[in-house]
Each structure stands twice: as C-alpha cells, then as structure tokens.
Image 1 (cartoon, rainbow, N blue to C red):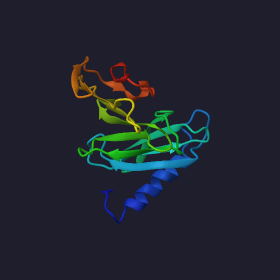
Image 2 (spheres, one colour; image 1 turned 90 degrees about the vertical axis):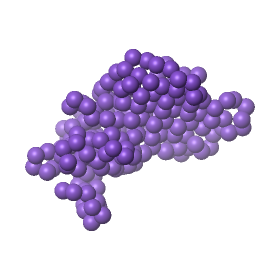
Image 3 (cartoon, rainbow, N blue to C red; image 1 turned 180 degrees about the vertical axis):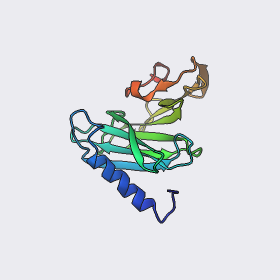
Image 4 (cartoon, one colour; image 1 turned 30 degrees about the vertical axis):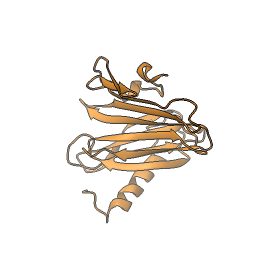
Length: 191
C-alpha cells in the first residue's frame, strides 16, 4: 500500500492495533500504555511501507517496535526493544523521524525544560544485512546559565568518523546491532 495522505490514518491505525493486540513481541505479555511516535519508511528498500513505533510502558520505559512489510503487503513485527532511551516526559521529549533517504530513521530524546543543564540525543537506526543497526549517535549538552561550556559529539559508526566539539576523531568502523544497543553514551562522547 503506497503512503498517501488518504491512507496515512489507516496505516497508523493498523500499526497501533497491531501493537496493542500482538503478544509475540513481549515475553511477559505486557502492553504499552502510551504511544509517543509513529513513523513510516522503507527500511529494507523493498518498495513497501515499513513502520516504527515508540511507546512508553507502565514502568515509564521507552519501547521501540519495528515492523516490516511482508510479501502479502502486511506489516509484521520484526523488532522490539524496551528501555532504548532515557525519557522524562515532564522535562523533555522522545520521538521518531524518518531520514531523508527513507531507509533509516532517527530516535530523538532530550531534556530541555525545567532544568539548568539541557541535553539532546539523536540515534540513527538503519537496516543493513537483514539487521537493524545503530549507525549514528549525536549528543549535546548546554548550560542555560553559561557557566559550563557546551559539549557536542557526533559519531558515524559505519565510517568510524566522529567529532567532539568540532574536533575530528576516528574509531574503528562497526555495525552495532540494535539488539545489542543499550542506552549508554559512547566513551568518545563523555565529558
């Protein structure tokens, strides 16, 4: 089903219903309590609509669901991860955005309100060799009172190239499977 303005609501509804009725994604059969973000794209480049959904469960842990379209033009759940990023809905936000190439997407989280030290994080998630991987990481902090310097870190794991406060660095190129990702800050991005 091609994505158009006319069927976007239908696709979104179908995705939401799949999440709330699916039992094979959860070991303990829990259900999300709130949907934070829903996006579509073509993660595996098969010219069919795929989807990603971000939820927060009753324990206030962020959950990521990824769906791929199958041969029968139906979305099937292929990935689930709980506690993928930190969230505090009272002082920040968490949401998804499709990348311009439509085969990757971004997972944003931040703390920008009710705090002196604000931060934001962007994870780039891509589909490579039948796996979802963490292909990029961006993190920045800002002291709203200006007493501490700003800090910025950007890493492309696929090329190994990165920047800390505009100074280039290099690490070994790697494909980090999303199943192995935990909500940590890479060593290069610690202050």
